[in-house]
Length: 259
Image 1 (cartoon, helix red, strand yellow):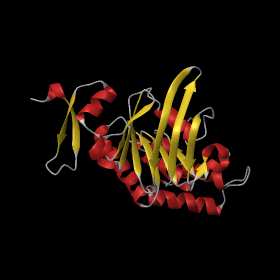
Image 2: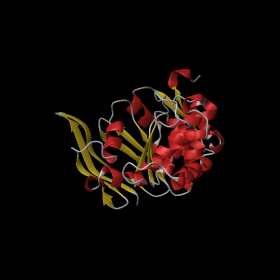
Image 3: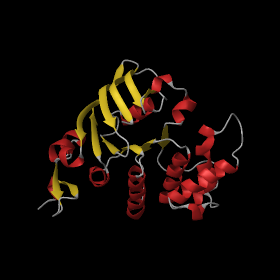
């Protein structure tokens, strides 16, 4: 197994946010975390990433308790991919990806030829090597997101934590990012991503983790987990689940829009 969360709980002051969360994400598996805003998805990620220390329970990656690892040690196991953003400085695409190699660079050393090679290989893997010298703020949102994923690949971590990787992208870029994420799982990465899109989760994920009020209310394969009752419980809206003829795709449609 790659990631094992055991009875993890966390509170901000006296306000509980996570309550007894447990799940396992294995090598080569894509887990989609569903749940409304404020349910604890970001807090869960921060606990796994070592950014929050006051939790109870355990977060174990590749057999090692995260609480026993320094930030530098943890960075060799897990990488974080935020939503696409605009930095204050227009770094080149290669420089953005090079930032991922710092986990393996001693002290304050500058990246050398080996680090540049690692970054270029990551960009090649994500299909953006032709953008090597372009400004990060001068490419499309999808290309920026792929650069952030390439940065995580260059970090050489085997577990990737993604915060809504396809949000705020047009339809074509959403599909492109989803496909590249799937390729990474097929090559052995363990990926845990948050999403507000049940349809996307059904298409791309191997496993669904549904959170509500800081608790796990569903955990399993999309075909077994995503249903009308779950979506209505999570988001408080009435929906119907419409399946394609081959049942390979399902769509959540508001009930009042169906005739």
